[in-house]
Image 1 (cartoon, rainbow, N blue to C red):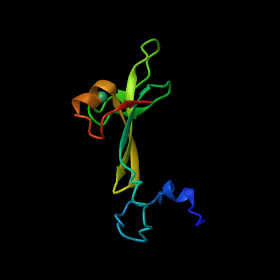
Image 2: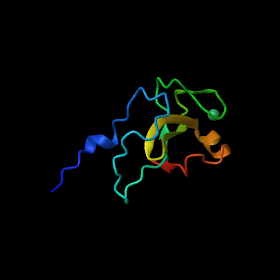
Image 3: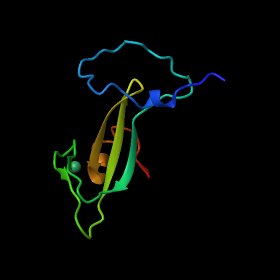
Length: 103
Ligand SMILES: [Zn+2]
């Protein structure tokens, strides 16, 4: 009966450059902890993101159908950022955000 707002899980203060760690800690339900996730996807045209491992552009190449690993990075249950790795680089980096799974 208690209405939990689902929006609260997503909206993170966008201008949180300072580490305001405490603030109001809404109590998280014990069985839902947000952790970093890594998903394997095809690189899409127009991608313009650097791989954090080799620092090269994760770029789309026609006909290659290269794959990338997209990571949603969480710290302490709070979403921080998205990182995109080359598939090979993610393995070389020793899967920093957990094992990559196919989307
Ligand atoms: Zn790379």
